[in-house]
Length: 106
Image 1: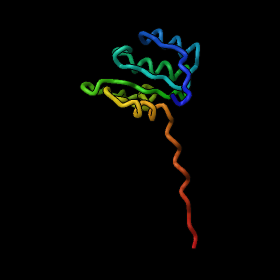
Image 2: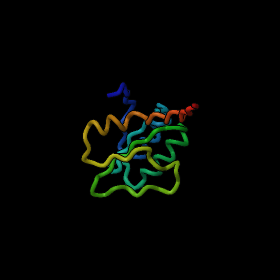
Image 3: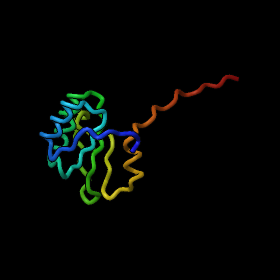
Image 4: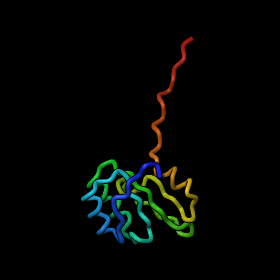
């Protein structure tokens, strides 16, 4: 999907941090359920290892996550389950930087 390579899969935050340390990915998908209450710690640790790391957090719609005050621990995208595969595919692609405003003369 969007030519994303999967470097690993972890059961929790400690194992995930080690995978980030070894593989240095550009994208991390975190399931709140598997990461537990420490998902925000995982995000912060992963970004300390790989600055600029994009993070997608998956969480149940019945219990949306409370996002931390620290921006380094916030995900770039929160996907609430259930979601459509198109939503997941769209989340994989980083947003395009806005074009510079055009000026008109005349």
